[in-house]
Length: 290
Image 1 (cartoon, one colour):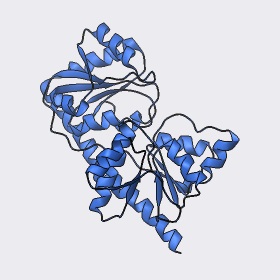
Image 2 (cartoon, rainbow, N blue to C red; image 1 turned 60 degrees about the vertical axis):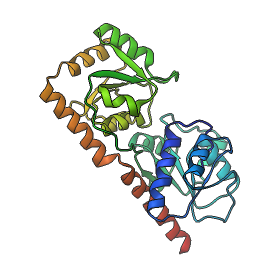
Image 3 (cartoon, rainbow, N blue to C red; image 1 turned 180 degrees about the horizontal axis):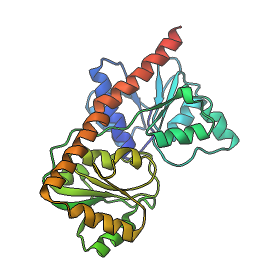
Image 4 (cartoon, rainbow, N blue to C red; image 1 turned 90 degrees about the vertical axis):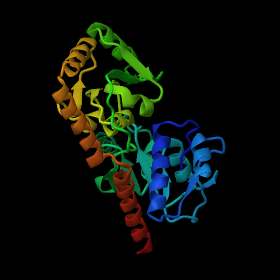
């Protein structure tokens, strides 16, 4: 279940999961709005799609966004799994507590997101950390410094622009990361809050080191000094980190590129994400059967 009407990071994760679970022989359907890009893409790949999830029709219901979570609870769909990909705290009002008490399991996108759920009183035993994934990308070999192009005020576009100016570095803002990473040396990913950081996963898939804010789940993706660097959200600090990373010689850069790719391969592939999700599905189906 995904109610998003744009094709953003969460919707890409749903599509990755649909494809991977198909490979595992799982019978599944996507519940999404008729005009949602995700629904159109899924239907085009032969997946069953619907606008309404019906109680008792499926062994598992998986809500991938807040609106779907609410709908599933209102319709009393069980067993219910809810993915939580955001960094902000769970609301503490009466309705929010009622809603969050009615899922059978939570998939937290990071240990940071898990901590947010536990702080809201969700029992630890029903929270499972399942990292998002990135597809395999061709190995990068270029010299460009890029950053995601976004209008989201929670992202640090203005901070990145100012830091690049201070460092005297040309920064390219990308609206097509998978394509632009191929010619990149470094991804600058600054944010004021982050559940995990899908752009950083993409960069590591391509073997591109990441300069990231030391916030939220980004600290679980980027290995400081190994696959990139973590930095405070301060223009001077970011500028210094930029110059330090770009000042590495060819051998040090190659080592960091290899480390970034190994990090993706060991932790953030679609197969790893799908397998971990499928294990949670199987455990809930087993509980239902018993």
